[in-house]
Length: 210
Image 1 (cartoon, helix red, strand yellow):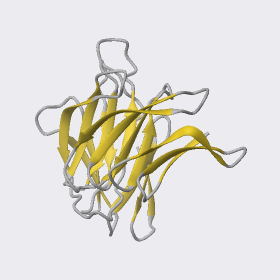
Image 2: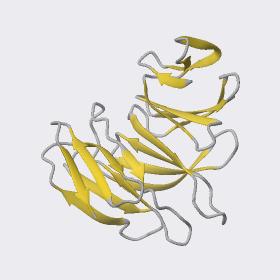
Image 3: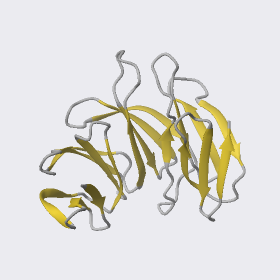
């Protein structure tokens, strides 16, 4: 099964073997769906749209049924272009987290506070992202634990790649990579953070080595 979001605001579960959308596996949001993500368990799903909403869903792994949970407005009419969900590696008291890129010059970190996918804003990081058409994405760094800390990496309209420390209160930006000549739209680490790939709006891909 795969989950698909479309410009009509539909979130739908598709059986890839049969090509049929599952009964009970669809729901409608306020605007065009731009991003969807599951939590690591596969039982919670979030969808972000072009009107600035994030909606949570409970997902039944056996039937494919979607049940709408909670909806929050992040920033009115500011597109949610990327969502990433992550649990902490440590068993100590840490809420699982959701990362969201918003076309209001921000990357937002939410704590997932309930089983229905309810979110609570924890941190807001400034990045240049104002265009509703710039589908800028971010990612949690793979190595993430309570004791060692954690970082995120994100693209930006100012052609740079930014790293933010999630736990640092003062000056959370810990690194900035320059080399692109257009909006950086996507970033991706390999499993051990030794390599980072970034791509921009002009089609250039840069591989950064640690």
